Image 1 (cartoon, rainbow, N blue to C red):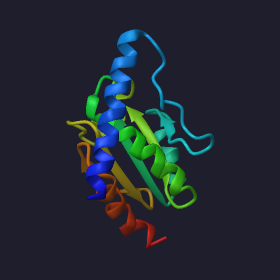
Image 2: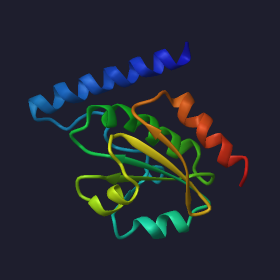
Image 3: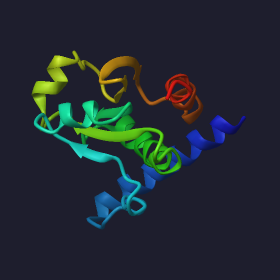
Image 4: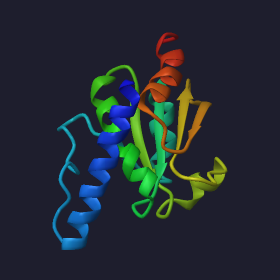
Length: 143
């Protein structure tokens, strides 16, 4: 199954990242494709980002969260592939408690899809790329 291979790739990257961090080096694969990376959001910039994009995808995460680090490469790749169709953002829940509380983020990673400036869908946990694409597809068709 294609998803199993992708999950294995994510697991392998995560293990490489952990091993590299233990050695005190910069983790491979942490740099995004120029211009395609999700926007780093804050409590202050969040509303403007959501209102400024018909379809917005926000990844609520924290640097210490293993599953968040597993899903990050998938989100970054989708940001590149869906550029112009979906705006991708990331909100560090530790640094931005106001928006995290506003949307009752209790588990991370939590990914929310906003359509027309309003919450439309939510994904909780590290899920396969196909599940994220399936949910996004419902809103991309409507744009």
